[in-house]
Structures are given as C-alpha cells and as structure tokens.
Length: 282
Image (cartoon, helix red, strand yellow):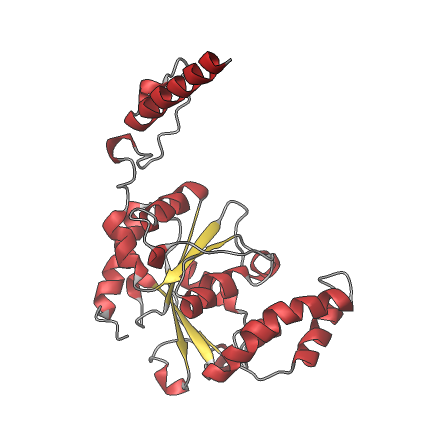
C-alpha cells in the first residue's frame, strides 16, 4: 500500500510528538532498502569513511545527534543483526555455530531450539525479501518516508503512546511484543514493526547497552511508520480530564474513595451488590 503522507508530514509529526511528550531525544525514522540507489544524498555511510558501526549506534546518532546514516552488512560490525535482518544468506547450521561461540545460551541444544523458532520462522523468509540495508534518520528532519518509527523515552512517555494506540482497541494498532534480551532496538524496534505491521515494546538489550549508549531509564516503542499519525490523533485522550496528563499527575493523596472516577464508582456499586448477595446466601 502506497503511503499518501509526504516526507514533510512525517517531519511535522516527529516534531509534534517530540514537543508534546518532552522527549529527551528525537524519534527515529527507519527505512529498509533493497538497492543502494535508494539512499538519499547527504546520508553518512560508515564504510565510505573507513569505519564500521552497529545498527543501534545509527539509531543513537539519529536521535541524539540529528544525523542520518545508511548501514549495510559491509558497514555493520554487529554481524548477527545483518543475518537477522535477512541482508546476507546464511544456513541454519552457520547461524547455530555463530551463536554457540557467543555463549549467550546454555549449550548447543539450547541454540538449536532457538534456531527452530527464530531462524526457521523468520530469517529464511527475510532473506527471500531481498533487503540489503537500512537508513536511520531523525524523524523531525527525516530524509526518507519511514517504514518504521522508533521512539525512546521514559516509562511515562511510552505509556502515553501505548494509551494512544489502544484508545479505540482496534486490532490493527494493538501492541504485540516478545522479549529475549538481544536485538531489542534493532530487531524489535526497527525490523519487527515493518515485517509484522505491529507496534513493539523495546526493553533495551545487551547490544543496545554495550554499543548504543542507551541509558538505564530508557525504554522504547517501535511502530509501523504510518502509526505515528494515529498516535498523535489520540495522544492524551485516555481518561479525558481524569487521565494521567502531562507532566504525569503522580499524586498519592490519602483518603481516596471509589467516588474518584465514574468507572470506579460504578464498579463499587457492582461489588457491593455482589457482596450483599453472597452474604445473603450464607
């Protein structure tokens, strides 16, 4: 499906959500390319400078330093992600051997079980798609129409985004996430929203923390690029005037009752009725 939103629309959306949520860093626009001709001018390519980077580092450069990078297998020193993104064909046996040498999991048997889940279901299909790299750009000044938008923030900021996605409880916008502690920002935040068309929560993993300079308090959410407009449409609507708001209304007053909100009050009435019925049965 062709995205009818312009690059300028995405830039405006990136600036708006950055401002409204008081984010510490820019949202990241991520585009996957099949041909190097798709890379815009003035986008940095590490290997041209005689350097290598990881995917999570390009995200950091985009969101913290307002720079745009294109990365491919020849730029990427984090070789598992080049394989995981399907940029280089690799056999299941080669994948297992690389992971055994990493010692991330207990033994070869554990890696074989993981390979059946990850390699056989994901990597083979990704390889067939023919993508060869990605472009990461700060969304407010994006050089590309993003396939994925990745937003880092604290728990409160990400909660507001989750609320916005779930405001109508439409299946299309439901958040779907699994966690492994590896490949979080690159795989979960960048690739999976593009492949599955689902938003994904990111708890930064080993590589993110070792290479990407992600702070301890930061989490993230990755979503299909077009979802950013839906988020802005529903931002801060959850709960109306009684919602969390922004800044977060983090009060813990004493003496609260169920009359605090209409929903609480209604449920109190239902609970009292049920309790009375149980007492009468006794």
